[in-house]
Structures are given as C-alpha cells and as structure tokens.
Length: 177
Image: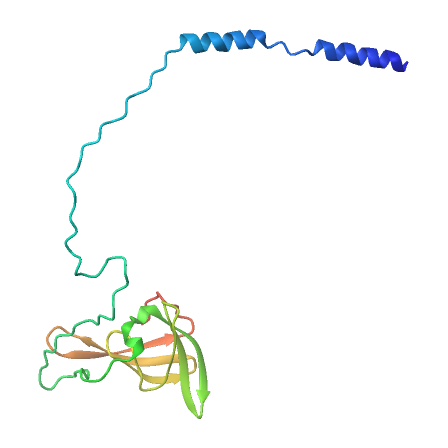
C-alpha cells in the first residue's frame, strides 16, 4: 500500500511540471515589437544669479535680539503716563497671551506666582512686578488669580489704564481679559 501511495504521488508531481515556454516566447515577442519611446530631457533656461545684499541685516533664520517696541514719548499734561525711565523686567518681553500661571506659593508672608512663557521659561512674580508689553503692573495675587493693570496708548499722547487677570485656567496663546 505504501508503494502504491509513493507511485501515485510521483505521478501527480510529474504532472505538475512547469510549462512556461509559451510564456517566455510571448514576452520575447512583445519586447521585439514594442518601440521604446523616451522623451528627451527638458532644457532649462539659465536664470541670472541673485546677489544677496542684506548681509548687514539680521538673518531671517535667527531669533531677533532683545529689540523692544519703540514707544514714542508724546506726553500731554494732566494725563496718565507710564514710567519710561525705569528698567524693564524679564516678563515685559512677552505679550499677555504668551504667559500662563503655573502655580502659587507664599514665602515669609509674601504671595508669589509662577508664570511660564510660551518659550518654556519659568518666572516668579509678586505684587509690584511688571509683565506684558504694555507696562502691566501686578496689583494683587489672591485665590489663584494674578490681577494687574496695563497702560494702553490712546493715540493722542495719553495712556488708558485697563484691568486684566491671569489664572491657572488660562494657557499661553489664549487672550485673557
């Protein structure tokens, strides 16, 4: 019985002989009769060389240096003016929308807030410190809220005071009112 099984298997395997001669003849015939049509490369027109003439200016691929916003000091009598003579603090480089409150703590009875900028830098502030682009002075730090007063120019030489707040819920990139 075993011999019969081996014989049947051998017979089946011999019947599965790959006959691909007709396929090889067809491929050779198609290759002979198909013309090869390759388009020539396009000719490129030479453009004049650009000469970069702004070498003395800042590279557009570098961050700007500490360039503050120039504020024209047009003062009128009897109207609110910010103190232009004081030195600016670190958080005055950032707009309010680029700042977020990350925490609060008290040290020696003084309340502090931790404020993070959109660059990832972390700053600690207390009452009387300044933040934002418009002379924002911190008035109070209470119940998870940093309250401050900004001074916005009105275009006529005077400055208007505006109250604003930062909270733990406000994230960098949002507009806080």
